[in-house]
Image (cartoon, rainbow, N blue to C red; front, side, top):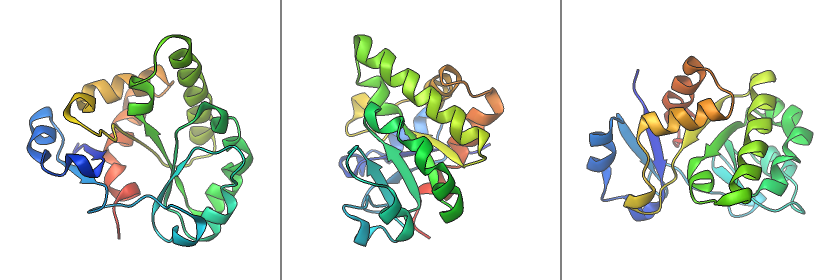
Length: 174
C-alpha cells in the first residue's frame, strides 16, 4: 500500500526525506493543497478549523474538502457538524504535529479529544486521513509513527493504513 504525507510549504525542498522514510510522496501546501482562510475561499480546499466561535457550515457549503482541527475546544464541536460533513462530502484529517508538539496534560487532553472525534468519524463513515503537516524536518514523522498515533486514537491496523493511503485523494487538488 502506498502512503502519503502532507507538509507545510516550508518543506517543499524536502521531498526526498519523505520518500526515504517510506512515503510514496508528500503533498505540499501551496503546491498540492491550500488552506481556506475564510468561507468564501473554501472551494475544494482544506480548512484548518481552530476557532470555537467560527462555524464550519459556511466552509462546508462552499465546498471545503477536508477539516483539519487544531484546537481541542473545537473537537467537541465536531459532532455537531458530522451530518453536514457527510452531506457535503468533507473528510477529516488528523494533524499529527498538533499531537506531537503538545506536552503534559495538554497532550493527554488533545489525544482524548482526537480519539473521541476519530470514533465519531469512523462511526459515521467519514473518510479520515492522518498527516504530519510538518513545518520543518524535526516534525516529520515516519509512516510507522503515524500508524502508532492512529492506534492510540482507536483505529485498527487496516484503518490506520487506509488513513495514510487516503491523504492523497482527500487533500490533493483535483
